[in-house]
Amino acid sequence: MNAVLFPGQGCQSAGMGASLVEADASLRALYDLGSEVLGYDLYRICMEGTAEELAQTGYAQPAIYVTSLVCLEAAKKQGLPYEAAAGHSLGEYAAMTACGMLTPEEGFRALKIRAKAMDDAAKQSDSGMYAILRLPVEEITRICEETEGYVIPVNYNAPEQTVIAGDTAAVEAAAEACKAAGARVAKLAVSAAFHSERMTAAADIIRAEFKSIQFQAPTAALYANLTGDKLKGSVNMADYCADHCIRPVRFTDQLAAMQRGGVTKFIELGPKKVLTKLVTQTLSDVEAIGITDAKSLAAAFSAE
Image (cartoon, rainbow, N blue to C red):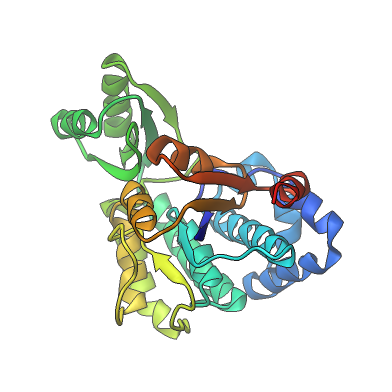
């Protein structure tokens, strides 16, 4: 069984998706749709945006989303089959689109609301995020608890990769303490402490405004960040997406649940191959590939 995966914020770079659009001009329609909904030239941001522009939440989220959809559509044209989908943080919106829960237009509408709300919330707090590698999550949790100020684990990415978030002074202190304990640490290219209480103002806006977003029943299984398992039953998606902003991403649990559900091949679609690496670090006896551009697309389907 195949599952498609979609990355989150922080993987953006200028020119992402360019070779796929050069190979298939019809994919440009996704950028045009996004530009119409968002009110700015999304294609220019993706192709020519500066690092500073692409680091801004208001631009980063739609840019990564459209790149993921371009990769998805290019792969589907090659005959890619999949029965399940999951995303990491922002990537869950591309996963919802892959599952038929959101049309691309509704996805852009949702991210216009989400990105602005999160960008506004980010400007109200001095906060950030660090990836902590090669240190058990229990040790990271203990360090966060013992650090003065607000800092917590928020992304459970792999057995030895956890992301912490919090107020700048506290998250930097916790990162230094983790480094002293033997970890490798890396500051993430994001503007605030996502998936933490510092996004409460954004969550309140999403809870109210997502009532206008049309969500459909999934046509493929969606594995959810909040529960780490398959999305089941009737879910209030406005509430879910609001909670998604302020609660941890349980990606390792998602991967384990997908494997239990029969997934043997994971195909990441979007900029870079961040999740592909996490799959190989977390699971055994599965295949993981990343499709980021025309070259990797060709390689993925020539191997079959």
